[in-house]
Image (cartoon, rainbow, N blue to C red; front, side, top):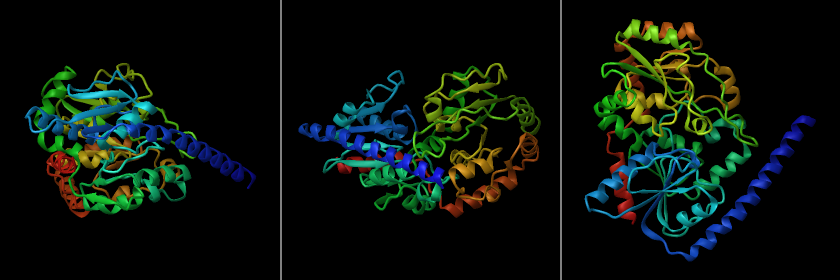
Length: 407
């Protein structure tokens, strides 16, 4: 009992400090209200500034830039980023993600577009529009209230604060329409635009397939499995940390199993979660295998998925997006019990999902060797119909049309 009271006291102190800091930072936004709002200015960010030019904001920006080039609009796009070395296309102004740059640019823009929460203490003015794209479609791991007692008080406070600022949350399925209410602690408008980051999967599959092989100097007929483990951030009751433990996957065996079952020469692309990749230097994978390639520093995972032939993860929602292009998806959950104990009960029983599940290397190789395309397609089609998926490759256009109407 004494230990529990200590933890609660520590958490209460942490929350108090965060609230004081948010109040002080909020003053910067009030000061910046001396500057007028520019309705053509749009501020974007990914993963609270730690991400780069990726996820749904990227594809919304692509559509905005396209309309600028066609002379149909004159949008000014500003991107908040922690690392100023990250690359952005011409037409996007990247700015250092500091308090005063955030306060100035957010206070003077007509529209905000992000794939994660705003920064606690942010203030929004009247006539500004905040569009939340979120960074997942159908999820395996629980978020928000679905985490139950494992959802920290501070996370609830930040989520509720941010959700009160949001004008629109984007959705690509009826499942998300319902989940976002508790997941994001949000009671506002949810609009059925589809998910902008999924547009590339539908519209640019062939282009990305060729581009990816050219960039990494591998044969055009080579096959690629993307391995993308999910983010592990601890309980997050106080200071947020990132788990950097190495995977237990035997990559040499994995390559052999893929070639035995699907033929051809296979490569494995490894992509860590953006919040982990941002804290790590380029991973040294060449000593494991020349056909294991680190792509963690690429800011956009969906363009990688578009160029792949198979997908492997533990609990990442991206497996559902990979399935949109019909490629085999596999789950490797060697720490399932520990993950649930830390994160909370998963949204779905993994064994009722259409994806083969393995708890160790032997099971993973068996899942690959016994993979049946016809059975897999029937199961995934049935699942996607059940969750009401409605992606059609036009989400970005719908979002920009909304921005135009609001400008």
